[in-house]
Image (tube, rainbow, N blue to C red; front, side):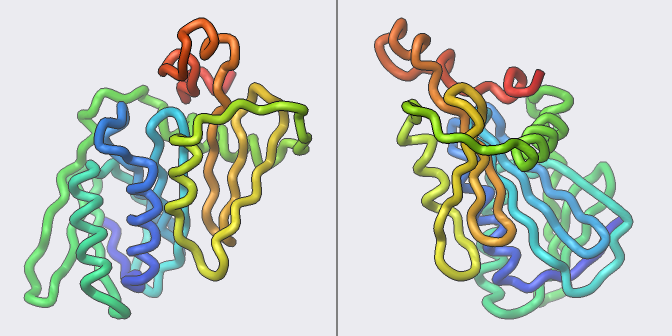
Length: 216
């Protein structure tokens, strides 16, 4: 079991940013929450764009824990964090079981593990590897780049400390683009396959990024 406390505004930032990458009709119905020694990390993807944010925890014992939360559960966690305003939120991650939040009345609010969703078994490992690899790539500026505006709009919802400006790191017209916003948020978006989009007379799923294909 992993227990920790986190400032409500920090938790609200993590939940808000993750929800931006979890549209209601996403093929991925869960996000990944990971607790480490001094931090909590939340990652979400719809297979076409990915977002991850990190926040420090104020106290607790982290033994290393992770679990998947459904969009509905994350929305509930987001409401709790915003309702707490500037207070601390105490979280309990029960390994293989779920996540609980201690409310003011001392009652536990369980969040069931949603890992039964049909996902690639190594989805989160692939996202982690992708973001790590993109951090190491030397950026270039291609002559032309095709982007689906609807995919890029997710990044406009990201909250961070200070002014929200996105740095784009582009390595080629065909590879995922690294997006950095503020000191903690990292994400990725895949350019549209121009040939596939032309053949289908529009942007369809076969012209977008499937995370299972983004990493060789």
